[in-house]
Length: 230
Image (cartoon, rainbow, N blue to C red; front, side, top):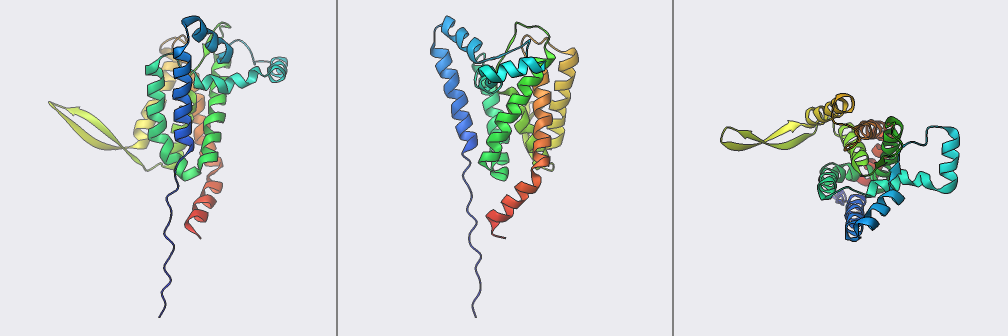
């Protein structure tokens, strides 16, 4: 009697998340190695400038001269290493499982398009025309939103101080991410000024990530079935 042995499922290697990780880190190192004047010039040349893109004429001009690409290039610039490190950590935590589920190309689209949308939201929300929006926080927020939509029942490990000891506990992801999203809303309306953190970018990125995952879930499901061989 012959017994059919199902083929061993190959674990696909995530490539988009490491690629983005390396690109963000390399861009920061290159900018940091430049003289202060050169570093500032890099931010002004590639960062997202506020005070525009609020009319059809401004959009036509931005598309014609290529300045609309700042919505993406600004994602790879960071104010300091703490700003960069926070984004890199959250990119790895939420990006790797999200990419393994949705695929590298779709994940890359999520990051870049979500980041562009979040930067645009910051530009429209900030009235001052002399601000520069930089950083991948909005794109990472899109990744967090997609993670929540893809894994609503997931649990995240958290270290909590209980008395004199540190206790590792697993908390439902929707609670932690929900609390994080609530804080973004609170800070956007009553928290620190726009000078340090573009809170609307976080909110817009998170909402985009949730919608992106929900709208592409049928394609993601087909991908997972194809990878499993049925």
